[in-house]
Length: 246
Image (cartoon, rainbow, N blue to C red; front, side, top):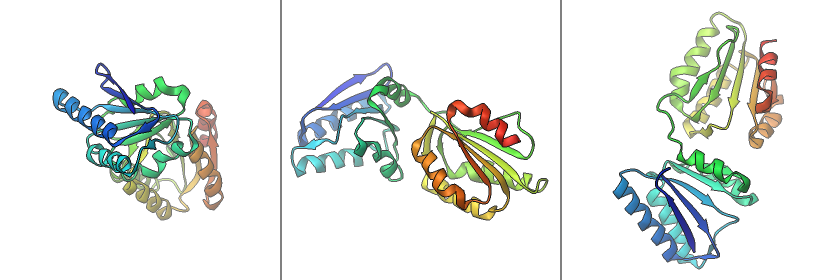
């Protein structure tokens, strides 16, 4: 079954799979979502509190699950996946590029943090928060929400091009904090294209994050980048600032 708690104050659905889940369970959740959206004129955030992969009763239940996702992923803005399951923990990275809803994983101990994130309304505008107080040859920023192609087209690319007219080399510091929700497919392409275009234009790159997949990626691909690359934890932000300006 699917146990559903509706938190209207925070505009949240907290959904907890228990035991075997049937076709009727998914259809019932879909009807409840539709009624809520029609009554409140807004879609809720979803918190999926799952200990492990759902146990579908049969193939009809699986298809009902997929239909629920297909029909609602463009309406729902955020899905917080709360689980200690190793399999479920990698799901956001696998499906994020295919669904409109933002999907983020939290460990079971961070259920309240997951609820707060799913209930938060993202600000409109750029996802880049520039970090002030840096020398002119340093570009430092934190990514808030989802990085998009627009952020590259309107902010990053013009800023880098302008600074390279004055400086032979630039230093870049990027912070991926708790508010980071990922990047769109076009933004990932723009990032790769920008990197190849200015392959020798950077002398230092500092990544500040606690996200393991980003830290591991930096260690794997860092040696392939001409710039010095260093990874810092979020609690080492001041150390990262000192290193990038040195």
